[in-house]
Length: 192
Image (cartoon, rainbow, N blue to C red):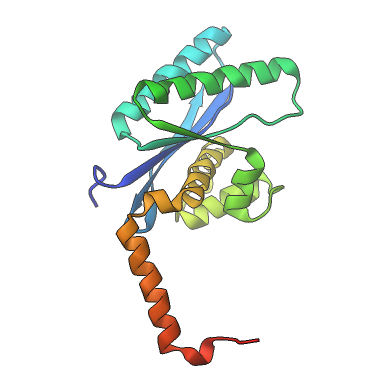
């Protein structure tokens, strides 16, 4: 498989302590993991140094993998104001890094991400990780939740924007195959 020709989605689960990332490839309707991990800045005391490291690392990921789009989790409410401010800064530097490279940015609400991957907007991190491991055929159950959440965010974009990822001629082909299936199997059509 040629990684240069596949469609790549960079999923980011932003955080002021740990930022999860996942690069998901799409090739011929097949999904696969290219890279996955965390940017851990917990031990860095200065908040501005933390966001500098996050920004630099995301730029390195972009340079290395050349993703087509960035899919990032939007803010969730209910935290204290200070936490929201720090999270917003982490999101901002990630978005800025993508925009520096001319990469389109898509933001998804946490609930939408969970629904797209598990079918349940209140799914636990364990449930999300389990689905990610299943969908992407990941054998490693020890991946941090920040990384599996980032993969879920990337998959949310894949499921949400499927029609722009798959070439139009392929969509037409699939529609014709469905029409052919109906024609070949009239006994399977339920009429009311």
